[in-house]
Image 1 (cartoon, helix red, strand yellow):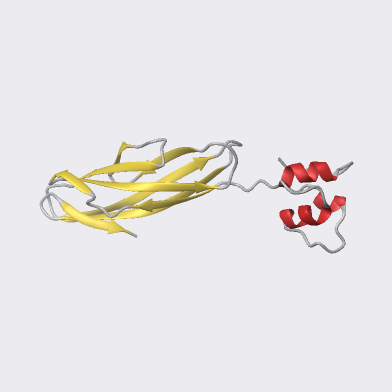
Image 2 (cartoon, one colour):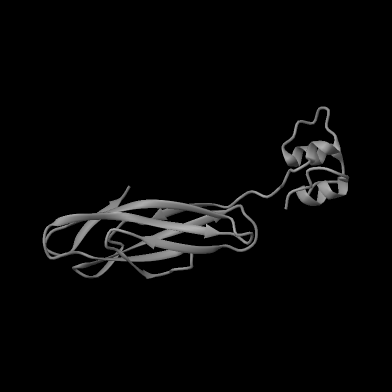
Length: 156
């Protein structure tokens, strides 16, 4: 939570926000401030909170295929920063469906290849929400090429 933007502020308030020792130099370093001419008012409105970030990393397609016309592939979400626990919301496009993993860091996607020759592509998107309600999203594209059922492909 951000420090107040005016009024009385104490070194204790600042130390609690930034997790620093109760001295100006330690707190200035923790807050990323210049240590020259530092005063308590230099900390007005500052916060140690960093919004969440996320990276979606898909696995190689054809990770496992129990039938020749169905392709399963995975994507992993790695969240950082933010505050509190994370929740995950996945979405896929391009004719793929979520097989399992909605609400978790690991998603399994299912794509049924048509019986004709061709290709398909789409996106995998994950939105992470932290304990404060702040969100971040990341996407990755996928592509499948197929010939008469079954196929292969990859990610961009």
